[in-house]
Image (tube, rainbow over all chains, first blue to last red; front, side):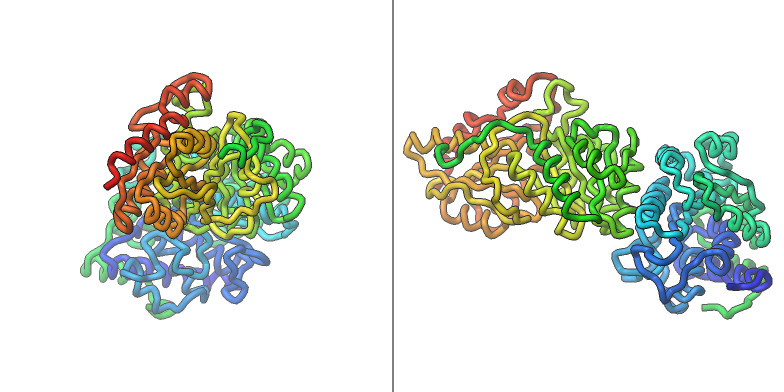
Amino acid sequence: MAKNSNLKEIASQVRRDIVRMVNMASSGHPGGSLSSTDVLVTLFFQEMDHSPAKWRRDGKGSDMFFLSAGHMTPVYYSVLARSGYFPLEELNTFRKLGSRLQGHPSVERGLPGVHVASGSLGQGLSVAGGAAMAKKMNKEQHFVYALIGDGESEEGQIWEAALFAAHHKLDNLIAFTDWNGQQIDGPVEKILNLGNLKAKWEAFGWECNVVDGHNLDEISNSIKSAKTGNGKPKMLLMDTSMGKGVDFMEGTHHWHGKAPNGEQTEKALSQLTETLGDF
Amino acid sequence: MKEKFTNTGNKDTRSGFGAGLLELGKKREDVVALCADLTGSLKMDAFEKEFPERFIQCGIAEANMMGTAAGLALSGKVPFAGSFAEFATGRVYDQVRQAIAYSETNVKICASHAGITLGEDGATHQTMEDIGLMRMLPGFTVINPCDYNQTKAATMAIADHHGPVYLRFGRPSVPNFTPEDAPFEIGKAITLKEGTQVTIFATGHMVWEAIEATDTLEKEGISVELVNIHTIKPIDKKAVIESAAKTKAVVTAEEHLIAGGMGELIAGLLGREMPVPVEIVAVDDMFGQSGTPSQLMQEYGLTAQSIVKSVHKVLKRKL
């Protein structure tokens, strides 16, 4: 398991990967990838019990992770590759014809680390709930993690899944909301206001906490304290900034699904230290 | 003809599903069942009672049920997710497409009250589009058995098939005539009667209508070949092409819209491989309405008489 100083270095490298992948593909979603980087790095390099050697699509013997906000593939693929699930060079094929690294996660080409296709929003939490239920049925102690977006939480199915997980006491389900406050068309509160998100999750029967989503210690502690069998599923609302780490992408919806050009990429990379070597 | 197929007593196909599911539960630990507040209607209550720890009540939240089923399937369970056909297809088409079809998860979608014979609830609940929707999804197997015994056998057979399956059955009591012990082979058409002048390909509730039609036609001196297409996808291409090559005239019969249905599928296949005249007995581009199942079958032309008429028509078109 990585130490926190290492996590910081990994996060910086993952952010470089995100910017470079999206630039090379001339498409993709850098904003949400950058905002959820610190959460995913903490999860994959410290808190989650997993390893590429133990990888099975059915998740037996490991914790499982589901990316419901499937457009965040840049951060997902970078974290998977740097965890050793597939060769780092494969990041070069992101969004290219024939690649296992499809624009949104898929399983048909057998990419290790991916359990289900996602990206049609609102669906991943249901699938994670099913996986969590299977672990309960099998009397397996491992946890199931899921990441959803705040904009994604406008989907009704999220709240169906919320009812279901609480009703069936899936306390092995730990979900994160990348609460960056932005979606494609603008700020979430202007598009379709979610109101008091914490109160909503609590009213749906979940244990819910707000976490500084860019503070690695706080993220780590919040996950540790969520790993309790108190009969409730857990929602960690990650207070984040879209585009985090690249000044001109930060806090705006403009970089939700837009690739930086060459010059912008150079500018972005100058703000992100190369710590582990670019792919 | 009908003497060959004894109706051992009318039964609903959904009860065949319920009986098959219960037996599966006894045979296989990995079989789990999900339902969206229609347990009694789908006859899943026997399974629920016998295996409460493997029955998952999802409430009226079908989208979540399909996602949950996908999560269970990818974790190694064999989930049977049940609802009315309309709510198991149209309502959740994207969920089924993403998490089940495209994700290649081993989910069995069990759809009751399919077609117009759902009856009095009316068009909001009657789907005649489901075969079309489900057969468009790459990799999906689509099965529409004809009676209680065949539905029970199909329910058990799909557990042994790895991959997503759409199993379609119905509400009304209909003749139960296939042998109780007949094995169910996915993708294998069953020739109920051989003949030389015309082939009737029928599926689901229309198979019994086709048996009655065949009786009438044989009395008129027409030699009919009758084939039960219980698996619509993958269709038994060999059986369809060989029979059409022999009789050179085809009538299809199904409780579904023409658009996307079995008739279009067979007409398309024969158009490419073995062009012969085809007449389709199905519903043409309209919604249903309230009524009893038999009234509705009459009203929308899903009867033995319609099949007989279509045979007469296709024989006139025969070169």
